[in-house]
Image (cartoon, rainbow, N blue to C red):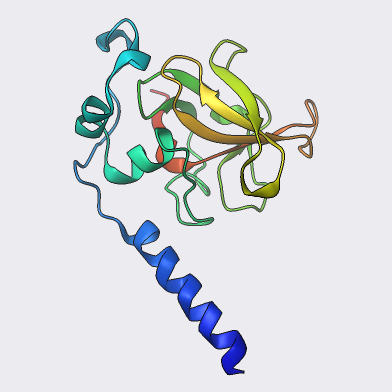
Length: 168
């Protein structure tokens, strides 16, 4: 029993700071993309840290992941557009959102092909397809080929990477 309990407690202690980190600068939402520099990818790490909360920076700039079922939008059902929390770029529409049972917001497709970029991610001994904001390069999550029709894709996105703008 002790053999199993010690690793379990150690894992919980290591995961707790990531879940409980308070934002350094609470951010209600990214400004519209039009109010950002021409090339947000040219911002320095210090400039990003000024603009983003600690959790947003960890996920968007350091390619982290929030814990499942803890994010603001995993069980969110309002109608509107999900924007990048880093630059305000429109990324996904609520009509393309579905309940994947994973604990992260999931979409069948991005709002447009230009809204996002993808690249191969070989971290953690797996090969996955990483999803990045097409404007600022911020890490959003991953896309998998196990989603529903019509695309068969599951765009699994971190809530902290998104800002929601509801329909009026």
